[in-house]
Image 1 (cartoon, rainbow, N blue to C red):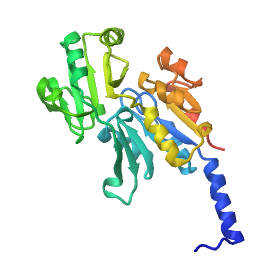
Image 2: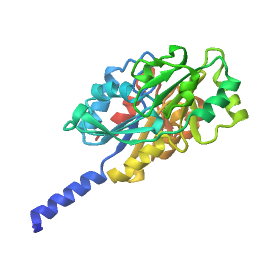
Image 3: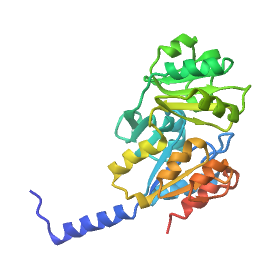
Image 4: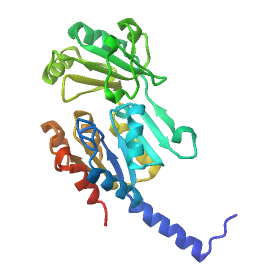
Length: 283
C-alpha cells in the first residue's frame, strides 16, 4: 500500500502539470525534415533535438517504411516514444531496452488484389510494389525507391495479387499526378485509403488507415489533449494529419490542397521551415 505524504502528492502534481504542458509533435520526413535529396539541415536537426530534450513527445509520422524511417529516428536521437510508418500502416514503440531499440505494436494489413487489378487495367505500364506483412518489399520490374528502406524483391504481378500488404505503391513515368487522380476517380478504390504524391506516385493503405488514425490512437495512450497536438507536413498524405492536429502546419512548398488543410504555413523545406515551428514550441 502506498501512503501519500505531502511530498509524494506534490511530486504527483508536478508530474501532472508537466504532462499537461507537453506537446505531441508529429513530423513528416520527406519534404519536411529532409529535402528531396534526403538531406536534413543542421538547423532542422538541432531544433528537433531541442524539442525532444525539452521533454515533448516528438513522433516521426511518415509514408516511409520501417527500415527507411529508423535512420531518421537515429539522426534525431529519439530513443523512446513512438513512430508511425507506412502512412499509418505500422506503429513502433521505441525503447532502448528491447532488441533493435523498437517493437512493432500495431500493423494494418489489407488484400491488395482488387486495387491492383483495377489500376493495372487503366495503368498497364506503371510499376507496382508492396510491403508485405513480414516487412519485405515485392516489386515488378525490380522497382525500387529509397522510401522502401530495403532492396525490393523482383516478382511477377500474380505474386503481388496473392500477397497481404501493409503498403502498396504505384509509380509511372508516363503519367502526371492529375492523370493518376482522374484514374482513381473513374475506377474508385473501395476498401483502401490512398494518396497521390508529388509525381505520378500513389500510396495505398488499408481502409481508414492514415497518419492521423495512427496518431489519434497514440494520443489516447499518451493522454495528450487535442489542443496540445502539433503536426508539420508537406504532402497530400499529410492532409488528414494536418486536420487532426490542434496546430497543423504546412510547409511552404506544399500543394494548395495541403495548405488549405493546415492552420498555418511555414517556410519551405529549403528555408528550414520545420525548424521555425519547432523552435516556437520552446520557452
